[in-house]
Length: 107
Image 1: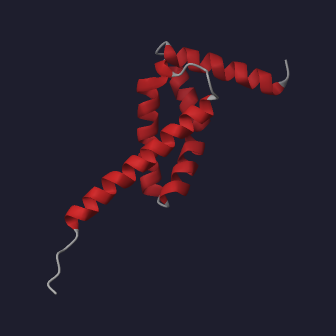
Image 2: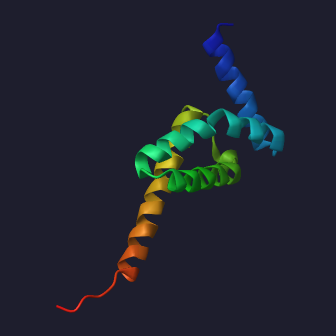
């Protein structure tokens, strides 16, 4: 078995363990992908604080929804789509917040 095939099989077993509610497997999955998720969130948001928040939200989503992952795409593809959605959610929420908190000016 070559290295890339071995990594794919390792990842599949890890995800299957997560789908069976194995918390230690989820911790390993987090360690494997958290830096990449944070980096992507940082690029999208431009803020390390926001990227950290997005990263936390992404892994909460992964924890809740890992049972839906059906191996039809690479796990990283599924994960990065979640990152994109959570970053977009942040911007939507932030935009609404900013619209309501802008000071009114007298002209």
